[in-house]
Amino acid sequence: MESRESREDRLWSRVGRNVLLGAVFGGLIGGALGALLGAVAFERVTATLVAAAVGALAIGLVGMFAGSLAGLESPAPGQEPSSVDRPVGDVPELASEQHPPER
Figure 1 (tube, rainbow, N blue to C red):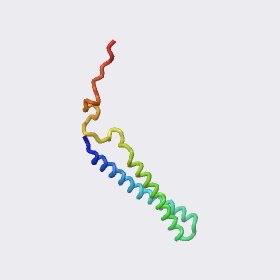
Figure 2: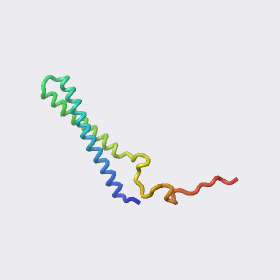
Figure 3: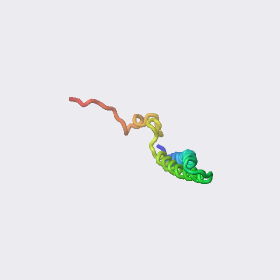
Figure 4: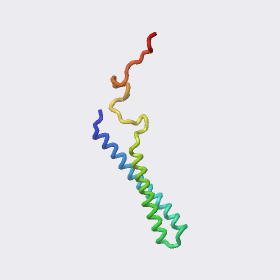
């Protein structure tokens, strides 16, 4: 059986990776959107840069939050970690031979 520490290590590794990816991609997308909106709404370059920074920060935070939630999801079916090849069939306590009821 798998130890609790290794499961927690995998969980926090997955959450940390997803938070980092959410921050990077959210920041890039937010910065681009902020720069675009700032260029359209403001005439000064400084105001456009501030809009890009605010967009990067805001969407980056949203990306971090979404990444943390995505890291908590269960693995896809068939990709779950297991200590046996066939999780239900190889553990006799979980599966037994099925027979039709006798009449």
